[in-house]
Image (cartoon, rainbow, N blue to C red; front, side):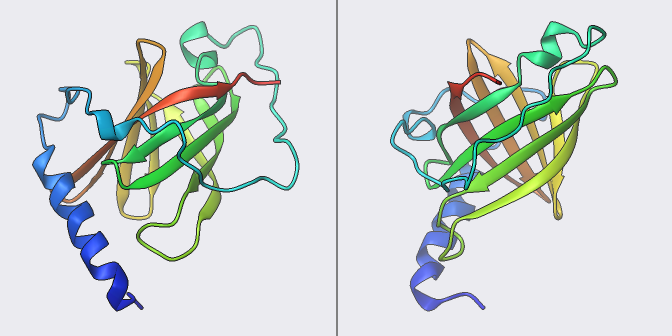
Length: 161
């Protein structure tokens, strides 16, 4: 059930997502609202367990390991990502957390994604497809569902281990 107080926030998120549309392989220009150093999602009950990558895992994959945060989807919903494990085939295990925004409570989920031949981390979240990539030391992301698109830019919060 969508609470009436949340309807304007949801409408704004959807409109902001449509306003930032670009081609599928074109990164959007950096928008100040996407980076929010004080963004908050959830507190983990215990430190996450990172898995040491094997010698067959390329640096382009291991660069994702660790915690990323300090960003908000289209400047509205805070997001943290803990990349816990990456293997030589590009399979990734992660914790994915969002602050309140579309729903009244923060959420956190364990997800599995893959790193493609272009070095981009891809994951499905329900009917949405999310793609992350590292550029200039930041983790950029785009979330697509149908013709809607929202973006985020996160900073490294901590390295793995």
